[in-house]
Structure formats: C-alpha cells, structure tokens
Length: 83
Image (cartoon, rainbow, N blue to C red; front, side, top):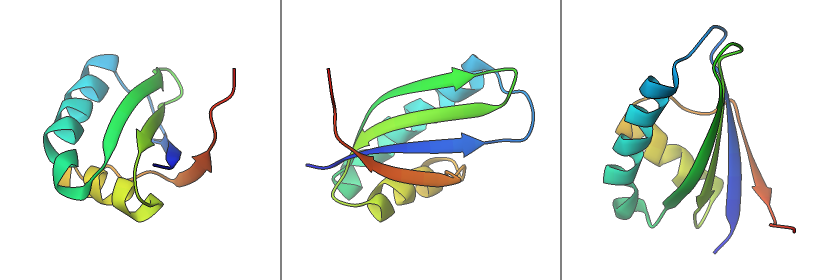
C-alpha cells in the first residue's frame, strides 16, 4: 500500500495534547477508508503537524482527517521509505 506524508500548517501554536486527540479520532475513523495512520510529528511553536499514513490514495487519507476532526492537510505527498 502506498505511503503518504501530509503537512498541516495551522498558522499558530498547537499543543501536542490536542494533536494526540486528533490522532485518536483518525485511528477510530481510518478503518472505513482502508487507511492506516502510522505516526505523526509536531512542531508546537510553529503550528506544523506531519502525519504518515498507508492509504490507497491521497484522497482517502484526506477523507479520514476530514471525517475524524475536520483538520485537513495543506499538502499531501506520496513518499517511499528509506533507511
């Protein structure tokens, strides 16, 4: 299954606790769309969030965010894992 990395730019600070709550909502929603969110990274002071997911398409990954909590990514990139 393809891997996708998405980038959220919130335009202000974000707390790791709020991102963790949104991630839990993703995990509860992802099965309906054949998506599996794997990891996320947060830059709290710059309000940037990066999410890694296995998904059949970028649209499927975006749909999980939209359905789970409404925070859609600014950009989504298909990526390949390296060492």
